[in-house]
Each structure stands twice: as C-alpha cells, then as structure tokens.
Amino acid sequence: MAAYAQPAAERAPAAASLLANPQTQQTHKLRLEGLLPEDFRHPLDQQNTRILRVLPGLEVLAKNLMGPVAEQVLLLENIGTSVLVGHDQLTSLHRLLLDAASILQMEPPDLYVRQNPVPNAYTLAIAGRKPFIVVHTALLELLTPDEVQAVIAHELGHLKCDHGVWLTVANVLASGTLSVLPVISGAVEEGLMRWLRAAELTCDRAALLVSQDQRVVISALMKLAGGTPSLASELNIDAFLRQARSYDEATSSPLGWYLRNAQTRALSHPLPVMRAREIDRWAQSAQFRALLSKNRLHRQLDVVATVYPGVPLS
Image 1 (spheres, rainbow, N blue to C red):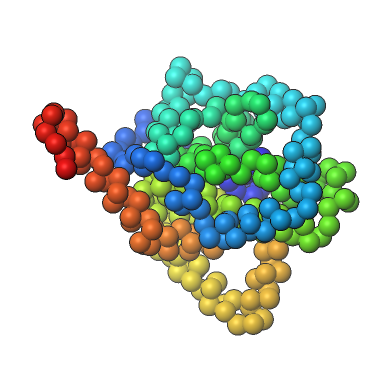
Image 2 (image 1 turned 45 degrees about the vertical axis):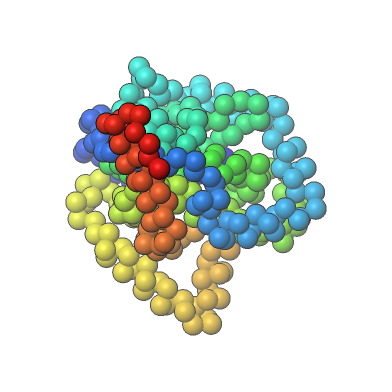
C-alpha cells in the first residue's frame, strides 16, 4: 500500500472542488513514448533498492507477509466501502486516470473514491489481482483537477516502478500493527523506511511527468502540508519554495544535519518542503528536459506523417 500523503489533521470542507465541479481543464500533454522506470527513478531510490536486494530473507518475508486472507480483507474493505470510478461513474476522474496512464505508458488500474475527512490517496497491488488506487473525498475537495491528476500520477508511479512487494512491508512497518514486527531487526526496518522515502521521490517525478508543470505538483504538496480550501487563493508556491530553501540552510550545519536525520528517520514520507525542493530541481534538470524534448520531436514527426502520408521522415 502506498499513500501519497501522511495522515494529517481534519481539513475544512471545500467550497469548490472536483466533486462539485466535474469539468476538468483539458490540455495537450506529451505522451512519453517508450518511457521506462529507470528514465525517472530517483538516485536515492536506485541506491536503496540495491541495498534492500542484498538483505537476507527480505524478499521471502515480503511475499509471505500478505497471505490470502489478509489480501481478501484489504480487497473487500476497499471495494465494499468505496465508489468505483469508470466511464459511467465519476467520469471526470476516469478521464484524469486514463490520461495519466497514457502519458506514463501503462495500463490504468482501477480507481476508487472513498469517503474520508483526511486528504490522502494510496495504491494496493495484490498478487494475482488488478491493482487499484483509492482517493479520499477530502483530497478531491482540497485540490484542483490538475493537482488531483498529479496525485493519481504519483500513485501510478508506484505501479510503473514495481514498488509493490517492498512497499507492502514498509507500510505495514510504518503502521506498526502486525505481529511480524518483532522478527525484523532495527537495521532492516530503518532500511525499509529509508527506501520508502526514496520511492516517494521517484513517484513525485511521475507526477511531474504527467502534469509537465512543477508548480502543479508543488502546489499539491503545499496544500497537503498545510492548505485549506477556504485559503487556497492565498497560498504562494514561491514562498513555499523559499521555505524549503530556508530548511536546507537551517540543516546545513553538523547539528542541523543530525537533527534532520533524527526528524525523518521514522517517517514513511520525506518532509513536504524537501519533496517540493526535489521536484523543483528535477524540473530544471537536463534529464527531465531531455525526456520532454524527445517526445516533443516524436509528436512533430507524427504530425508530419499525418499531413504528408508516404513522405519519408529520414
């Protein structure tokens, strides 16, 4: 299970939201032809994945942790208490899902909307079943349609990058609810939490690849950190990024570095300001620009082939 945001305090009800206004703004975005997970996987995700692979017994534990009964409970809990999105149900959300999956070059999972006052979204990948995403109603009320799509794209990133096996173990550890916890050493538990935080950075990149506008992703992170629908118009993305830079400065000393590590060690997600800073940096990187430029060229060639059929393109 992957959650887009950590549980937060109950938010104020929204005056205007995707639920209240199903009309979404349609934009022409680049489809990322041939996109591979390694094209956007965060370096910390790569590094921590290599570390997890050498830990003895971890993969066996991950595969055996969620038995058939537990899987069925999770499945029934979600599909029995939520609304399944489809071509004839919450169609604006269905379009956002299909568009995001198309951009990321993957099959769309099922999408459910669940009544919950905490703005959140998560992914469940159960062995032998179609994976699905669950989005809380509070998140739909808090975010704009573009921001909701960025959250959906983040969840799709977990599936695209095949985070499922270790993701389940990491989230169970984060919840602290299963009796399996005593058999896992502190070092392994810390390694899993570190990997999960890195995986979240990768999935924020998936959100950017779909939105193709870092301000959309940063705005969603900012609202989930401390936004309310009634004050949405007063939120300032540039001020939030300055806040992120001030956090960097405050933790640049040896003591600050130690305190930052102590603050984040047990978290399942990186701090919101760190996520905003990371996505802003990647949006300006040569790697991100190259991905968009390559697919911009593909689109131009497709247009030429449509207008001038039969004309060689090379």
